[in-house]
Each structure stands twice: as structure tokens, then as C-alpha cells.
Image (cartoon, rainbow, N blue to C red; front, side, top):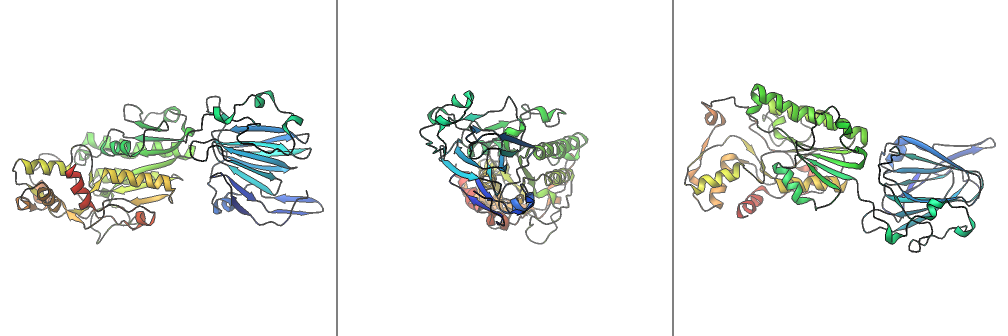
Length: 470
């Protein structure tokens, strides 16, 4: 088969999700030929992940019929041919509904294929002197998990051009298991930090129990440890969700609180950003309305410049800035978070039950965000592979003041909303015994972008009623 010159670069899907076949333009004349075997900008523009190759390998095969595989490694692979021609066979060995799916194709210098992690790869040379080349995005490690399938597996039933009985196969490849004995390759791991906080507990409830989802507290992993890069085999992780933060906004105005806030909200995200960048991990970082000063007229979009008023807001803005440098990142900006544990809604419900008439701030405006919704939005961004960047996530509906919300809590719990009295922020904190952090008066976040990404937040009033009913 002669090499076809002048093809257009294009990507074609296959019967295996994520396995992409590429036509490569090859330019030739009487002297020979030339091709761009891997061109990052052009290939990512066609939908290929920027998979970050770190190693280039070449396997030269003297004879036709050389057969190797089926191997599934814990990394992605870009396969092409420098000279000669192969018959390639790929079998999906990943957990999921396509486990065991097979795809075959002939590959010559004008063709390449992207093989995602966990898909078994094998080939048979069709002509002598074939040079098989592949880029991978991790280095071989004896501690990594590999999966293998027998070349002669009856379920996959690969129709090899040259019968396996007539070719040389290594003893190791002959000993590989049949499909029924193959342990499916698990997805890359998800690590949730801050697992015991309000959001951490909601993420535990949202993600089904699975061996590839890990939860860690401050006691489990120290983000300020100089040896953090060695704390895990980070290449095994696909996502880190940073739900850990210092949120005591008033305490952050004290000398000790300031140090803790900067350590948790800026230094720790910087360490995670380095880990994520070096290992191709998606970093999900939870941000706050406190990065704004609250003086904006209308809802804050994701592109509004940050202007934090106090130490807490400053540390969160610093954390956002460093996380935004990670190639794969989601910064989820939220406000007025309510979940499992002590919070404003529970406090108001308790006051109502005890017959207390509270004075509640009436000049701060925003929307409640319930942690089950926040967890669902984070999962949606990860699973839908939404465009990386900043996303506002709060409850939907009309913005309210804290006093408005307090009155609604009283009403929903069968008490008189008139028991709640509005006061200004300045009046509420007048005579406070310790430092008081400045609060943004406008905490309303625009939800257009998260809706465009396919997630529609529930109305905060509806979530409030459901929360109190539970």
C-alpha cells in the first residue's frame, strides 16, 4: 500500500470513547516525505486533550507479523508509524459500559491514534522494517497499575491479518489473561480536601462510594509540607477538589488568624497548583463573594475585578490568582453557604423555637448557597468537562438580605416573621469586643455562565424550605 500524500488533518471518533483516529498530512516528492507527527495547537483544536507527553519511544520491528500486546497502561499514548505499516487493535479495559469494546485499524505514516489511559493497545506489523513510535504522558513505574489481555481472547475475537499461530509472540504476552479474568481499570482518582467541612460532607454524600474517590482532612495531608510532591503518586489522580479553607472572617483580622488565613487560603492553594500543573490534574478550588468589596451595582460576573476589603477576602483572592494559572482549573465562587453543621439558618430556627426576637443585618444582599447544590455543581463541571475557568455558583432566585432570610425561616417554622428587626451592618457590630472584618454589602453573583455550562441552580427559597423540612 503506497503512502497517500496531501490528506487534510482531521480527527475521527471510534467505537471506544476517547480513542481518536487522526489523518496526518504527509508531504512528499522524489526525495521522500515529511509530516508533523505531533502538533499541539492543531491537534488540541480538533478536540484532543492537551495530554502533556513526557517521553517518546520507538519500537523497530524487523519482520512482518511481529505482534505485541494487549497492554493497558495508566497513561495516555499517541501512537504513529515512522516507517512501514501496522494492524492495530485496541480493547477498552476501563470500568464502565464499554468494557471489552474493540476497535481495529491499519496505521501507516499518514495516520495516528490517541489511546486514552486504560485502553489496551496492541499491533501486528504488516511489512518488514516497521518503526512504531509513541508518545506517553508519564514515565514507566514499577508501582503503577497495569492491565493486560491475551491476544487470542475469544471474547474480543480480534481478526489478526496474520494468524497468531504463524507469528512470534513473547511468552509474557502469551500468558496474559482472558477478558473474564481482567480486573477493569478504575478511573483516575478524585481527592477531596476538607472532607469534614460543610462542603466536604456534601461531596461525600454526592459522590457514590468508590475506590477512586478519596477524602482527606488536615490530619491526613499537610499542604504546607515541603515534601507534598512525594505524598502521593500524583499521576494517579485526575481531580483535586479543594474544599478546605479558613473561613473565620473576623478571626482573620487578628495576628494569629491572619497567619492561619494566609496559610490555608493562599499558601496551600499555591502548593496544590504546583502539583496539579506538574501532573496534569484538574484543580477545583472554592472561592468566595468576599473577593469583592460589594460596591458594584448589580450582580457580579466572573470577569469583575476583585477588590477584597479584609484579610479573609484578600487571602481568597490570592488563592484564586494562583489557581487560575493551572492549565486545568475550576474556580467555583460562591456565597452564604449553608450545609450540615452550625450556620445562620439553624441559628435563626433555634431562636424562633425559643421565642427570641433577633436583630438581623438588613443591608447585606445576596443569595444562600446550599452545599448539596454546590457539590452537584462541582460534580457537573468535572463530569461534563466544561470549559476551564471561574464559575459563580449560588442558589437562584431573588436576592435577599440576611433579615429577609431570617423572616422566612421564622415563617417556615411556624413563627411570626415580624419578630425579626432589621439593623445596619454598622449597628449590628457596634461595640464588638474584638476585630470585625468588613463585609461586602452586595454579594449577589451572576449565574449566567454556570447555566450556559448546563447546570441550573435551584431557587434558594425552594432549597431553604426543603432544608428546614428535613
